[in-house]
Amino acid sequence: MNFEHLPGGALVRQGLEDLAARRETDAALLVLIGAPRLRRIGIDVRDTQEARAEHRLYGRLARLDSGAAHSRYNALIRVLVSFERAAECVS
Image (cartoon, rainbow, N blue to C red; front, side):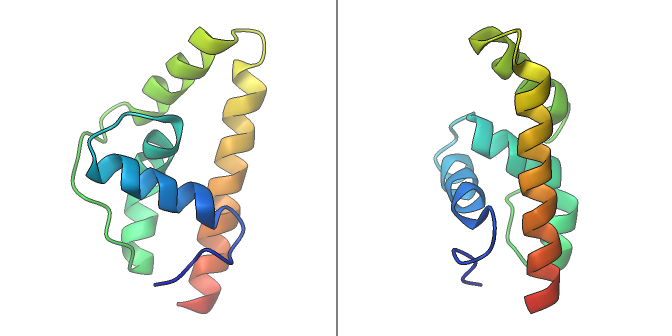
């Protein structure tokens, strides 16, 4: 599925690439958070360490900027949800 044109598509693509390379990045953790729904849409998310992905993402954001971690986390989740909704409409 080509989803670069969908909102958040570039971030999801980057997350999938990071997971394939076994890099734990913000984008990779975001994809892990959305993995169940992304799989239902038809996106191949490798079965990797999904456990506590939400906590791991928040922890990464807090280490970079503790004051902005909450708002940055919520913004990333909103991007993921926007992508999932748009992808469901085109799949």
